[in-house]
Structures are given as C-alpha cells and as structure tokens.
Image 1 (cartoon, rainbow, N blue to C red):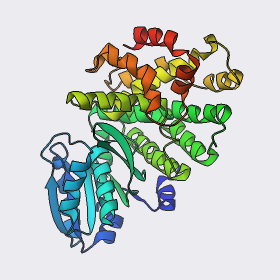
Image 2 (image 1 turned 45 degrees about the vertical axis):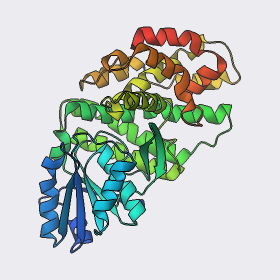
Image 3 (image 1 turned 180 degrees about the vertical axis):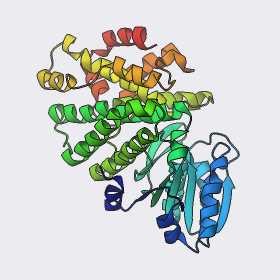
Image 4 (image 1 turned 60 degrees about the horizontal axis):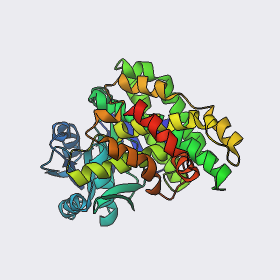
Length: 374
C-alpha cells in the first residue's frame, strides 16, 4: 500500500522524516506564523518541529498545556483558538488529544492544521471529525482533516509500549466494527460501503502481518501500524462517518470514558479500552451460535466465523503490556455490567451489542463476560 499516494488523494501530506527533515511540509508553510501545541508529555519532542520551521523562515509561537494529559473539551479547544488567532497554521505535537484539538480549533478558525505524531496510538490522525467531551458526554463534532501528518520512525518506534499497544488495539477493533456494519446491512438494511470497508480490511491485514516485527520493536512494524491508523481516517472520509472504524467496541470504550470523567479519574488510553471492548465483541460473535434463533441468524454466524478469537487479541495486547481484563482498570464490576446493557445506546448504530440487548441475549451473556473479562 502506497500510503503517500493514498494520502495525496485525500489532500494530506503524510510525510516521513528524511535527513533534511520534512521538506514538503517546510515548503508549504515557509514564511508563515505557526502555532505549535504541546502538553507536558510532548513538549520534549517539539524542538525537531520548531527548528525546521524556523529554518523555513517561519515565525513560531509555542503553547504548552499545563497538564500532562489535557482533555479534548471545549475549554481546551478554546485555548488553542485564542493562541492561534494571530497564526496562519496550527501544528500539534502529540497524538490523540492534541491532534483532535488542533483539527477542531483550526476548523473553527478557518486555518489549516497538522500534527507531528509522537505515538502510533490511535486512528484519528487523518479523520475529519473530532470527539469532544461536552457536559460529561463524548460528542463527535465537525473538524477538518489534518493537512500534514509528520512521522519520525525513531520517535514512533520508541513510543511507550502501551501506547503502541493502544494503536494495535484500535486497529484490531476493525475486525469487529466492520462486521457490525456488515450484519447491520443484513438485519436493518443499512448500506454497506464496500470501498471504505475494503480499504480498511487491506490496512488491517497488513498491520496484522507485521505484528511480530512490531512486538520486537522494529521500525518497519511501527511504520505499518501508522499506515493502518492513517487509512482508518481515510476510510471514514470515504464513508462519510465513522462506521469503518467504530462499532460496539468503541461504544463500550466511550461508556467507560464517561464514567472516568464523572469520577474525575485519569482516563486510560482510548485503544486500551477499545482493545478490551474488542475482546468482548469477539466473544459475543463467537458464542452467537449458542443463542436463540433470530431472523437471518445464519448470515450473521457466517460473518462471525471469519473473525479471530478474543484470545488471539488478548495475546497481541498482552505483548505490549496492555490491560486485558476490565478489573485491571480503575472501574467497578457494576459499571462494566451496566456497560454491557447500556453502551449500545451511545450511538444510533446497529452493532453486536444492539443485537444482544434488543433480543434479550445479554441477560445470560453478561454473566459469562463478567467471569471471563472482569
């Protein structure tokens, strides 16, 4: 997969660092005023970006959020907008939250934005939307696709292992969300986007093929993971929504995230929570044959038979030190049980959770899941 050619199709400069840095990016912002956004964790990586910008004749304005882990909410976006009012371009140095904030702030200011990626930890780099926390709820808001995604192989390869594992969790989740989309086409008549799904499957399989290298810390593995994360954003652009990248496993993650926010607790990495949700979804799919009959059950079972086992995902995530039981997170058993019955309501989207909860299968399945995954 030629990620640079694919990125150009979507108007994104996905540029890997060369000896002279990021020449395509530097030429596009030469002489402009650029806001560089960091937090306490990512400020250490900003020099590579700022030195290159100054070398291109840019005026660089730096703003570091005072938190180690800022939350992507309206207050955080407002700060970026205030700092970026007198700038021509917003560059985030980080991964999930800072990338989302820069995309949203840039969109609202009518200015382009980009990201210097510090970890292959999530799939929102190239998506055209931003999930924001509003009044304790996670709401997807319009944003813009990043104009530039800058990647340094050494930085990505040496990211904290659990952040790489979070990226793996976000990609392995595509097995489930794409299947959710497929079964919805059978059971509700929802249109299934073959192009978006096909592109996502190609990236998913390429990433799975390089898992041994990724686990071993090889730079090629980190590159392929980053490719898959970028493709996920492009697949969402093609589909016009997050269907190719988000299903029941993401709804479970969002449910837990809101619980952490309500309690004022640090939120575990998105891909970590999604990985746990993926294991639950896979279990639900593979045990569906033992549940009562329903219309078109045979078609859904046929899709379930194509999926990997939850144990296989557990082994992959364990290799990166990711939690593989909900009890490894600061979350109660009662919350996880409520998640199983309520998370499907977070989005108006048919998934394996919707199937179980609306057909009455979850009453029995919840006890099984709690025993295995909590």
